Length: 247
Image (cartoon, rainbow, N blue to C red):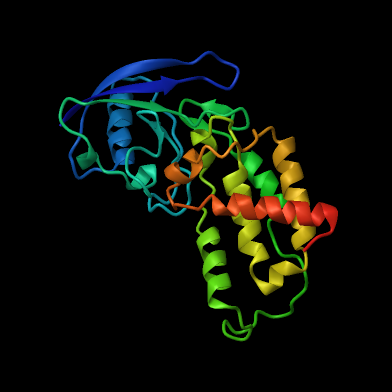
């Protein structure tokens, strides 16, 4: 199929960006990133600078492939990362607009690649368990209620790609932060540091310049792992309890 790509090009965070149009031929069985590989091979053969974009596992696990495709983070398919999006979702003659995730807290490194180290700083502020529990216990040694374990597992599915931030009109990181808080707070090992974790992670999230949540719900819709916004409600409740001493 023959496609027209409108690709965002930007030298760095301080430079003015612009769209470039490129014609590319792709097979319907290619992934979206493989199609970008074809574009870059063509540019290199023409002695032009290739388009910079993030990728790693290309298996929908790492979350580094974040792109805004025709106005939607990760493209048109629900529950799908950009690397798992295939060209059969498009048809011959289509024009595809490709942009980086746009948020103040995700400055552009170059072209389609953005700096998401702000997420790392949120995790470093409390998204871990530091209590000494000795050697790893057997998986069934600690009894956890099924509902609680399932809730923690669903939250742990977050891959930290940043689609929630890119989709939010406020650039909020509440879905990401709340998923990490809920994941650790629902398991016995994480309960010990729960109150400190909530306060520290929210404090760091605000420090990184992310916007506030106004319950638009776009984050849940565009999340490739379909993380529920109920996590945000839970985190708000946890935060109030940690500040005012409730349960």
